Amino acid sequence: MRLLPFLLLAFGAIFQSTANAQPFVSAHRGSSLVAPENTMATFRAVLAMRVSYIEIDVRTTKDGQLIILHDGKLDRTTSGSGPVENLTLAEVKQLSAGKGFDEQFKDERIPTLKEVCQLIRDWNAGHAAKVNLYVDCKAVAPEPLVAELAESGVLADAVFYGSDDYLAALKQVAPQAKLMPSLKNADELSAKIEKLHPYAFDVRWSSLTKELVQQIHGNGIQVFSDALGFFENAEQYKKAAQLGIDVIQTDYVIKVRQALDELKGGKK
Image (cartoon, rainbow, N blue to C red; front, side, top):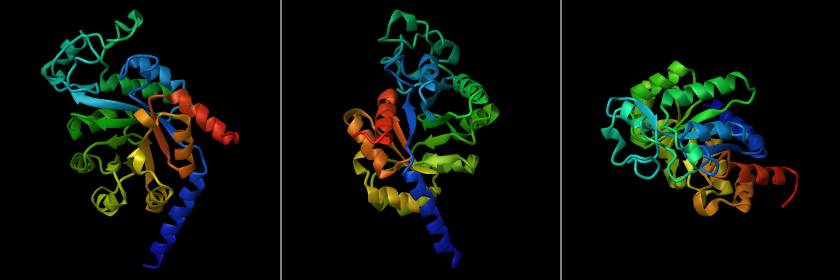
């Protein structure tokens, strides 16, 4: 039992040192500022933007194929309509995923998970700084998801976001998987740690405090948070960095990088 306090102090020391480092950046659905969300075009673009994670949304077609699409319906981002689960992969691949963008993207297609994994694997093979997947498990069974990521060699470094029950089921399939449940406040902390033994928490941005970040780090767990919508501005990025969070997820990768570089350089 004497070892436990030592381990907690060690974890705290480790995360205290990383708290002074710049947060890593996760690209939310790629970067919809430069190309349509969740497409190969946007994923290729953000690979050159110094990101550590690319967030993807995984769903399943009628014939059991895993694809990357945020919405359950096709209407908002593609030339199709209705639930994607009603279409086979071949039918999905007939649709344009460039809705709302220039003509240059009219031939973009909804990518498969395999295609995205191959892109990440090829990129990492030629670069020292790896890019990993932040997998939002929208509508996908744990078994095929784990199988495809393992086959592509990207399972070990992927982070998985989903409901607590889904993540618990995923853990049964892949015990070493890096789980990331949501966390609204400190009151949820103990129960979620006991149930899931997470790698990280996705903490609601408005709930971020120095004390909460330190409490999570004290348990050897990372802190991810989404700087989306109202919080997408330089002052918020800098504040999050000063709080010591580990990963900022954003729709504006370049703006985050600029703000963090200013902070590092001592500018306000």
